[in-house]
Image (cartoon, helix red, strand yellow):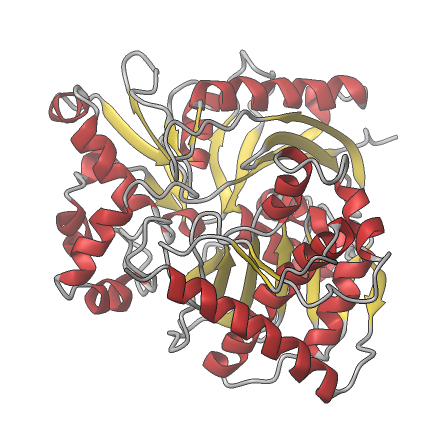
Length: 499
């Protein structure tokens, strides 16, 4: 009898590190997860401990093996998916980070980006990279670290400094400090890559003052990039899939045809539309990015990022203590017929697509003496759907196509209220799969594809099972009334951000 085989996805997220084992049918055979500490040294700054990320990620790998009684010989490949844009610089000789990792949410480099915008450079940057000049992306973070960590430039001059996103940091360590790579999807989020060629752009490297020598080699998303260090697990297990978390979710949702759209409802909301082998450039504040590369060249996507969605539920729980668990937000929201006229704009770290207003901050409008915690809970969930609606509306305009279905995943997609409200706003079905671990499955599928564990894209698509499809229940008049209130709240938040 042939030994049972699996692929394992290492899912290095913003708030946790996970390891998930998948079988050939895409079923979860084991899962381990540990939280990741968040550090806020100054208002608007967000950092992670890269060493903690490494320790935690290796720990959950061993935990999923032990918990599922798996042997190393059963692992056909490992895929890695990661929080994107977060960067760390480290010393090649000691292996130690020279500074905490600067997280994608961090706004410390917003003034640098504003200065470049004021010089009229954003059109050039967007044409080259498909991205906006924003602190969200990696390049300004790398530049800040080079300028503000005392030994960074000196180490770079000595050929000792390496820089990378979390996939690069993990692979370098997991390979026994042998391989310094990133994949096309992560690289396309740095502001340093020519979106058409998928290679580092010399003019962007010069603009941000980033030496090419410290950056990882760019490899396809599916293909053997390295082998796992024998000290971690024996058997030369291939690391064969790499993708940024949102691209991994797109792949895991089997969005293999242009026009297909997914939304991952996590810490933020990240909406992606697969657009095929030619990049589509946005006129509505969206980003052009690489969706995946199976070794034959990039497949592209349009993306809109909403910075704070699931984090707004966490805010209700941890800061306001209005709820004790995330599930309680749903129960509270369903206690009232509407929000009582309030709207919540969760611009904790500015507004992302399609507004791109980094100085905006969160507001609640329409509060009356009768406003209670149930109204607020409902307004928080509705805000997630409203922000997603704005991005999807822009996406349809850019791609000049009607979106007929939204595929949903991520932690907040378990909310029945949110999924139904999203369908009602968009007036299209919202399809939630049985396995909502689509981010991790995408990385596993990319790795499995590279080693023949999954024979082709059709087999991956066939493994996706629908759990529920939410159908719209209201008419156009209802939608327009709801959207009018939201647009007033957003306009207020944007206006308040201006000096």
